[in-house]
Length: 335
Image 1 (cartoon, rainbow, N blue to C red):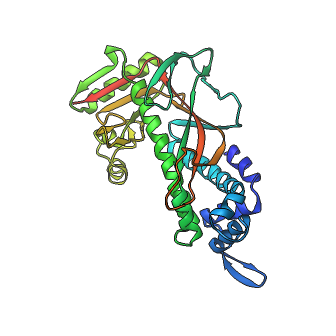
Image 2 (image 1 turned 45 degrees about the horizontal axis):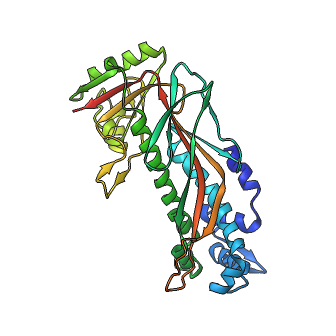
Image 3 (image 1 turned 90 degrees about the horizontal axis):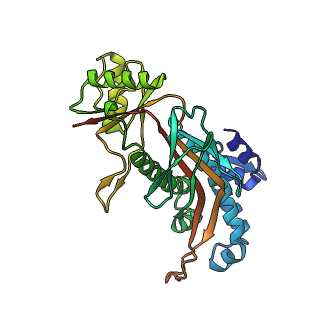
């Protein structure tokens, strides 16, 4: 939260207006005795940045002013959304561009290895050196040129523009997290594996084993489908959870945490297996995610020229990702 507050403190008046429009903190205000809609005021400010007229040439002359506005506002919003989406199992931190991105493990007896994603659908394992978690950086980018044209024309509002861009980034982050977790938690001790039709009794037994092996309380991880197999006591609270979330939030006093599921259309594959429950010791958030520097807005540099002369630019941000692998964990494969 401190990173978000610091970012907010750096915003210019135009950037604050853009962020307030997104958060709907202001919908209209008075200017020179007239009531103006905040969205219209923001459009006017952006048009002012490019000389009063939104066309190819005015954009080329003033594009970096527009880039700065987009980057600053979306950096703040992206940080907030990432915290909200993955806070249960993911430690998210902000770093200045060029800083060494490191995370510290509190208990190296419980977590021995970090699984590192490189952004190319592959991972590697690396032993923890001291208490530092190694990560690998890669860049994410999404195109929003068409949406920005529509915003300037008044056909969509700024909130919709930000939501579309943020949703694209969040999906990419979820895919990388899912890939890293799936490849990290594949092998465990034979005595900490269960492969059977679902049974509350078997899950209780596995929980007891992991508690006994680690000396720690535990938490259950799984996709919504996997967690939906868990029945638990037929209490009213359990039934409410099932109805509202599709799965039980608490099983015999043990917290159940949802992992983000993704789907690859071309390969017809889900990111995380829907038939596996992971029982891990409590004590660390297993995913470590660091943003290095603010989001950057850049032009298309692939050498092609659009026939329609539409302005084309991308948003890009550098991300570091690592996954802690517990030295002892349970895996329940539901068949």
